[in-house]
Length: 418
Image 1 (cartoon, rainbow, N blue to C red):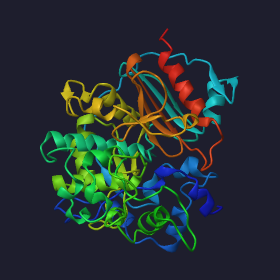
Image 2: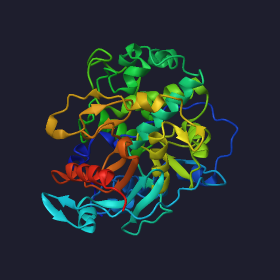
Image 3: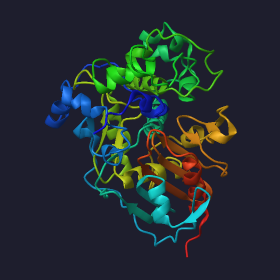
Image 4: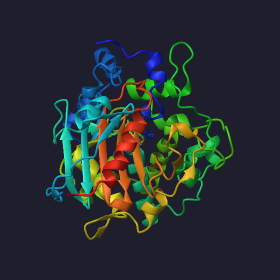
C-alpha cells in the first residue's frame, strides 16, 4: 500500500480528528478481551496500518471493521432489535452527476458509495450495499459521532446532571479553567463557537500543526489522551463570537459528559441511546489508548451498521421518540437543528450549524449529521424521509460531489411513493 502522505492528510478535512477525554477511574464493569487486546500499545506494523485509514486506494474497506486496526470500545445491542419494517420500493428519481443525467448505479459509483438507505415514515423503501459491504458490516461515521454527543448532552441536561447549557465547561472540568475553554459555556462549545485557537489543518513533518500533533500522538500512536490538548489552549476569539469547526470542542463536550455523569461515553451510549433505540447490531467507538487509560473518541469514532445509523436518524425525525418512548428530551431535537449562519462561502454549501448538526441545503427544516469522506444522515421532516449514505470519498474529492449528493437527496425526499 502507498502511505497516505502528509499533504493528503492535511487536506482531508476537519472531521479526521477523533475526540476523547482524559481517563476516569476504571469502573467495575466487564471489559472484553478483544477490547483489551485491541487497545494494547500499537506495534510499528499497526501504526503503519493506521496511517492508511484515508488512503484512497483502500478506504472503501478501511472505513469498515475499524476495530481490527484501531483501539476501540464496544457498545452492546439489546437482545431484541426494534423492527425496522419495509414499506414498499421507492422508484428513485433521475440522478445527476457532474451535470449529466445518469443511472443510480453510476451516481452511486461516482459519489463513492458503500451503502445507501432511505426511510419513509419509518419504513425502509430503498437499501443498497456495495463493495462487499452488507447489512452486518459496521462502518465508521466520522463526525456524525458529534451529533450523538449532542444527544447525550441533552439527556444529561434533562436528568439534571448538567445544570444549564450556559454553565462554563470549567464548572464540570476544573482543569479547563485556565485557557480558552475556561471562558466558554457548554452552549458555545456545542455551537462550535468556543473561541479556542485551533485550526483543523493537518500539517505534519518537522513543524506539525496542533491538529496534526493531536492526530498522530493520540489517534495513531495512542501516547496521549486527545482532550488533554484542550488544557491551557490559547484563545482566538471571544466565546460565542465566531464559528470555528473544531473537533477539540467535541472532545471537551465528551469530557464534560463523563465528569458530570461519572460514566464513560461508551456506557452512556449503550444505556441511554443504543439499548432504547432497539439497535439490531453491536457498535463501537474508536479509542485513544488502553482500557482504563484511553478514552472513547466521541468526536468522530462511532461505528455502526447502516440500518442502525438509520434508526438514529429516525429518532431525530421523530423528535426524540422511539416508538412510544421519549428517548431524547422533549424539544431537544428542535434545539439541535436550530441553525446559526456559519459564515462559510455560499459556494461551499453547509450554510448553517446547530448543536453538532449541519444545515446542508435550503430544503425547509432539513438538517444532517455529517462526517468526513461523505458520511451523512439526512433528515427531511417535511416528507418524513431519512437518508443515510456511507461513503469513501478520497481525501481530495472531485469538485461538486457534495452538491451532486445533496441535490439527489432532496430529489429522493420529494419523490412520492408509487
